[in-house]
Structures are given as C-alpha cells and as structure tokens.
Image 1 (cartoon, helix red, strand yellow):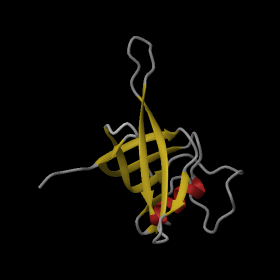
Image 2 (cartoon, rainbow, N blue to C red):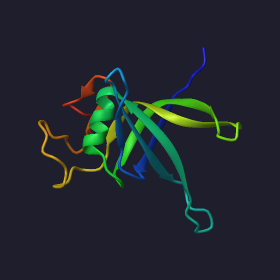
Image 3 (cartoon, rainbow, N blue to C red):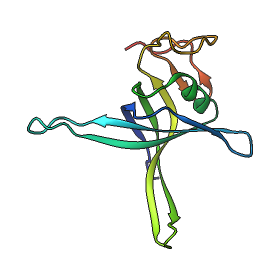
Length: 134
C-alpha cells in the first residue's frame, strides 16, 4: 500500500476563490507560502496550490483571507492537461482533507454563528467546537 499524506503550515498568498461544481459541491482554491529556513541570510519561500471541497471549502472561504496562517492536512494530487500549443503540462496540488486556522479572528471577519475560536479546526465533517489547544 502506498502512502500519500502531507501536513504543511503556511500563509495564504491571496484570498480563497470559491466555486460550485454542477453537483452543487463547493470547491475553494488558494495558494499558501511556506518560508524556508534562511540560508546565508537570504529568505526563500515555497508556494503550494491547495484545493478544498464541501464544508471545508465554504469554511475556508468564510474565515481565511490573504496573509492568514493555516495548517493543511491532505494528499498530493497531480493534475495533467494539454496546453494550447499541444504540449503536455502537469502540476502537483494539495487536496485538503482538513484545514486548521492558526490566525486569530479579526473584527473584519463576518459575524457567523458560531464564530471560529482562535484555533479552529475544520475537516470533512465541518466545524469542531472543541479544538485541540497546543
């Protein structure tokens, strides 16, 4: 049996983009940046595209904004397509199974019931009112 699992913490580089596919399932896409350890004083970051589905996607769209810190657990998925020139292209994305919000809520966030606690955790079942404190 093969193992395909990724856990990563990073900051959103843009606000999430929410779409609904024809089956009315929510799909949110966003990119996170993970800062690597500086080498010779030079900072470097890696960027990862993330896709979330269903309740996770709706929660991400509501509560996460550009610059927010979050932890993603999921699996890697390779997407392939042909370019306009007929060349084969591919990229690897993170398909999120759970998203943990690590940035405390701000006054600008919409009033929702219940509002997420400081360290909210969303998985395929939705909001966890009893998140694990670290």
